[in-house]
Amino acid sequence: MSTATTAPTATETITTAATGAPRRTRLPGHKPFGPLRIAAFVVLLLLAVGWLLPFLWAVATAFKTETDAASGDPGWIGASGPTVDAFVAILSQGNVYTWAFNSLWTSAAITLITLAISALAAYALSRLDFTGRRWLFIAIIASIVVPPQVLIIPLFYEMLAFNLIDTYWGLILPQVVAPAMVFILKRFFDAVPIELEDAARVDGAGRFRIFWSIVLPLSRPILASVAIFVFITAWNNFLWPFLVVGDTTLMTLPVGLQTVISAYGVQYAQVMAQAVLAAVPLIVVFLIFQKQIVKGVATSGFGGQ
Amino acid sequence: MTAVTDSTRTIVTGSRTTPRGRRAGSRGREQLISWAFLAPFLVAFALFLVWPIIHGIILSFTDQSLTGAGGAFVGFANYAEALGDPKMWQSMGNTVWFTLLSTVPLVVIALLMAALVDRGIPGQWLWRLSFFMPFLLASTVISQIWVWIFNPQVGAANNILEFFGLEPIAWLQNPDTNMLSIVIATVWWTVGFNFLLYLAAMQNIPPQQYEAASLDGAGAWRQFWSITLPQLGPATVLILILQILASLKLFDQAYQMLGGVASDTTRSIVQYIYEAGFVSYRFGYSAAISYVFFALIVIIGVAQALITRRRKEQF
Image (cartoon, rainbow over all chains, first blue to last red; front, side, top):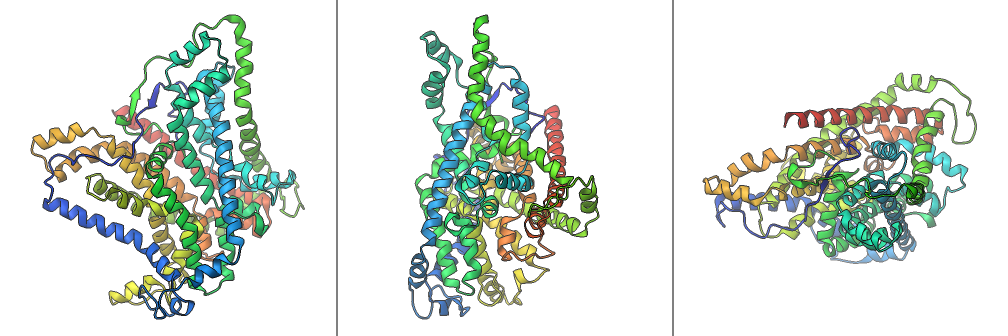
């Protein structure tokens, strides 16, 4: 994050990133059913209910008929009983599949390219000796403060010049530059013991061999963290895809869904069904990879954005 | 970065950045290898970050239009217009107002959530899911959900007000409450991120400290105030800065929740950049506003650097 406070030859490194693992043992000094503990539980429960309610309302509405959804009756189940009509209506339109697929593969491409080019650069900045290294590192760190929103005009102009408006490349390429991720990876590489590499060099291994077969395997946890963070950011990115893509078949999910909000008018059940459909894959992914996601966000979140 | 809790870092001694035992002849070779490693990133960095920054400055001194017309050098005219443009100041004011309204709950509620979850109360996966799940949703999805909740006729928000015997509100349609509505949706959406950062910071506090305190007879409340909270200082500074920078970039949810309609009470500076460039087609003027906004971000960045440096000197 900071520009001035990080010396390029920083010798400190985050080595013990948050594990994200729940505390196994109860903290000492707590009675299992002390009044304070019960109070904490109640507050926590209220907060959790408050945070889940908006989503549960959306789910409940998605299972209502349009008439029930528009009636303003706050009940969980509509007067005509639950129905999947809204889901059927959404899924029979086809565009949702295209948008979800576009989101999935462009986000994956952005993640892969970002990871590859950032890791290579971070390795050079961490381990190799070249003229201008210090200045290059300072320039990369300084660029972290530039908000992408500030660059939409010149970037759009550039895409016009390259003829990349309304193309996947125009959508993907401007999103692969992540100086904060270079910084995070560089700090991690700094902490990898150099003795491992020295041994490989004695055996005659080249720089890329060392990078590929020694450093990268050791860096799997940090690579996973960065990948998760980049993927979530790309998956949810709205402004750039919204500007650069106008063709309905090229849209990502966030941009595509935005175009039909107005088209559906007052069809609340369908709009909610759409929101629920778009949310469910991410919730499933979160439940499966909870530990990695929590860790990834904690590690990369402190470093960038 | 330097503001991460002290306990999260380990000092790695010795400088490993200069490879040892290098022979003089291999120097040129290492230069070549270095640039080969750097090349892919540097090409992207130059094309999609450095050049746009420079070109944006150039554009801001022209009357370039999205339609391709214009492009003549106009000196500081765009900047002069921006500084005298009431709409620019209004959107700047809205942005700062949103930042103030959203940052406080986003930090305080996150701290409360993390402090409660860190107590080891059963159901960890449920708490994490409830608080963090909204953060994973796209802005479009949360906008759709909250537009429906804030619907004055059939939305749940007014059902709740009615339940407490209060008058219904027009929420997003009313200029007095539309910014507040966006703040509520934003707090729900993004508090999970700060919650995770706080939780990570708390879990790096060595359990021995709690054990020692508990031997001295300190209860959970005392432990929180005298052990947990003081050690969260650096994390709080960082979370605060990250949150302020994130809030200043308000656009997605504000734009979508109002259905793309420009409202004088919610138009953020990023939305004004967008409107000037892509609605009025004035690329030159839009670029100039972008740099006024960037100046604000840089000022906050410098302030952050100064604060973290002063903290370092204190300890």
